[in-house]
Length: 250
Image (cartoon, rainbow, N blue to C red; front, top):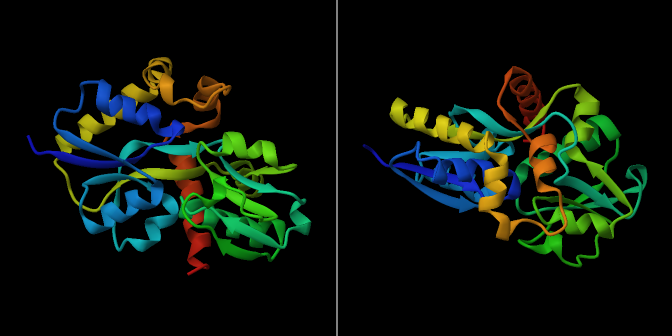
């Protein structure tokens, strides 16, 4: 059987995917690499992996691609870990720092600023790791597990998934499983079954990763209520609208 090379994000919200791939026993021959979102896209673009969990903000960089599973990292309400954190209310923000880790959140905040909030701040690209440090910014976009602590430091917090849903009445997709090749269908079927196994075993996932969970957080509630894993038609419609919006940014 051919080896399936996979790149995925190593955040709390992807732990069910990782658990399904590594512990379900449904995927026979694979190599899993855990990366930040931007590296997942880079590895797929360079062809060093066959399938990757790609931040959807990077899809416009690919001449062609295919979605290959029934799963994604999505939200149908607040997502909790993709945030605009600020010392001022939205209408008074003049500068926003942009988290290095994901282009999707960067592109989403720019869509919301222009089309929903009607503000025109200046943008500053933060260095790797800078979003979690004392950066002196009046507002930042931050994603991932670091937001559980960062949120305590800011009086204003805007959940970007929630803001998108209020603006469009559609769900949001942050990342989807993508290929630029054509892996053998049996391998993709195995991957899909493995992902389904992980999403269906949240409690077991959290027990397996118990030493890597944010302290003091209700991780089970977060995975079951804030993350929506099914890549269904409403999410595909929301994704299509988002991709239309970001064409304007190019």
